[in-house]
Image 1 (cartoon, helix red, strand yellow):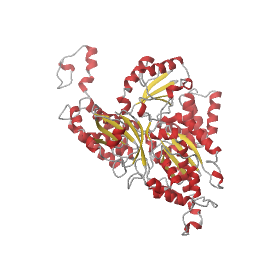
Image 2 (cartoon, one colour):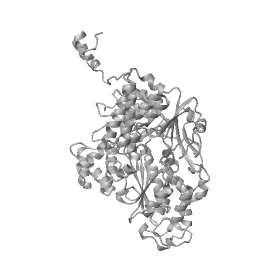
Image 3 (cartoon, rainbow, N blue to C red):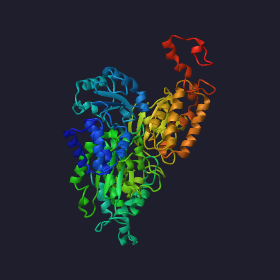
Image 4 (spheres, one colour):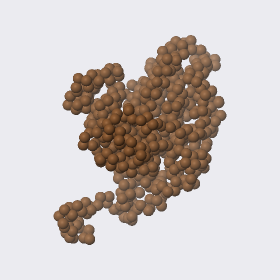
Length: 627
C-alpha cells in the first residue's frame, strides 16, 4: 500500500478486511492490526478510507495508531525485529545479542535500513522469560535467542524469505511445566464442566436477563441451574487470579443482577506484567478449559457473547485458539442452543491486542475492545454494570476461568479443600531468573517462597520480585512468607535474583519499563514516570546524591495521590522496595553528598572545544577548571 493513494488491489484488500469486521467502529483496532500485518504499516490513504468506512473522525483512527506499539503510520521495514527487554532478558545478554544482529545486518538499532528491508529495536517483555532471550519478527515470537540462531535469522532476512517460510523449529515454544496440580493435571474432557453445571438444575425456562428472571427464584426450594453453579463458585471462595483477589462469585452475581438485556463475558489474556507467562501455557495447552470457564460464566450471568482479549505478543496462538473455538461450535459447546438446551446460546470472539501494557487493566481493556485507545476509565461505574458498550460485563483473567471450570465440574467444597483459609485452591507461578529450572509451577496457596525457590533449584538468592514490577520485592529474611492473598498476593510472576545481581540496576530497568508503558493520559503519570526514569539514570551515571532518593519518595506520594490508574500508583514500587531492602547498593551508586545536575554543561561544550582547537580557561564555563 502506498502512502498517498491505494492501488486497486490494496483498496480491495482493505475493503475485504473492513467487510470481514462488519464495518463496525468497535472493530477499529482489529482492522488496523490486520492492515499492519498485511502491509507493514497503516498508510495515510488507508487511514482515511477506514475513517470513512467506519464513520469515525480521522483523528480517532490516528490516535489509535499512535497509542499501540505494534501499529505505525510509516514503514518499519519488511522485517521488524523486536528484542524482548525485560530484566531477565537483560540478565541473559539481550542487548549484546541485539548488537550482534545489527552488526550482521549493518544497521543501527531503532532505525530502518536504507533499503527498507529491516529494522531492529527493543520491546517490553514478550512472555518468554523461562526461555529467553526472546524476540518478535513481524509479530511472531522466537525464544532462546543465541548468536547462532541470530546468524540463521540474519541469513533468512538477507535472503528475503517470508517469515511464514522460516524453519518451524525457530518458533518452537515449550510449556516448561515443572509442577502440575489440580488445574494443569486435570482430566476433564471438553464439555464436562458445562454438563455438570447444567445437571444442577432444570433449564426448561432459560433466563434472558436478571430483571426478567423467573418468579420461581424467590421460592425457598434448593437453588437450581445458574444459581446453583454460582453457589458452588461462592462455596469455593474463588478469588480473581489477577493479583487483586476480588471475589469471583460477588463479581458474577453483580453482573447477573445488573440491569440490562445484554451481558458480556471477557477473558483478560493480556498478561503484560514482566515476568509472567502462565497464561501463555494455559492458552497453548488448556484452551478448552479457558473457554469452558467462560461459557460457565455466561451460563451464570446470562451472557450471550464473550471475548478473549489476547495480547499482541501471543499472535502465534491466534489460529490454534480459533481452531479450538471452531471445534467447540461443531461439538455443540458454543453457539446456539449449547448442548441442545433451547435458549442457552453463547459464542466467543478473539480480539488481538497491539502492544499496550496498560490494557491489562480491565476498564482499559474494554476501551480497547471497543476500538479505542486503551485508557483506563474513571470508576465507578464498574464493568459489571457498565462494561463493553456500557452493558453489564464480567471480566476475569485466564487462570480464573480455568479454576471456575474446575469448580463447576467438581464442586466448591472439593476446590476449597486445597489452599489456606482465605486463599482456596492452587496458584500458577511463572518462575524465571536465576534458577536451574525456570518454568510453570502449580502450587497450593500457602506455599512459602523458600519452598518454591528450592523446587526451582535457586541458589544464593538475594531477592525475589513477586508479581512483577508492580508487585513486591522481598529479601532473604522474608523467604518464609507464603504465596496467599493474606500474605503475598500475586498475579503469578516470580523473578529470582541471586547475589551476583545489582538490585539498583533491576529497579532501573523497571523504571524504564513504567516510563515506556505509561499511556500518557494523565500528567502525573506521564511526567512522573519520566522523572523517575531520569533520576535512576542520573544515579547510574554517577551524578546521584541522597537528595535524589528523597525526591523519589516524594514522587511516589504525588503519584499515589494523583495518578489516574494503578500504573502510576505502582511505578515507584520497585525502586522503593529495593531501596528499603538493599540500601548499600544504592549508596555505592551515590558519588556526591550534595545535589549534582544531571546534565554536564561544561561537558556539552567538549566537542566544540575539540572542533575549534581551544582548551584554555576561557573556553570552559565559569568555575570549571581547564585541564
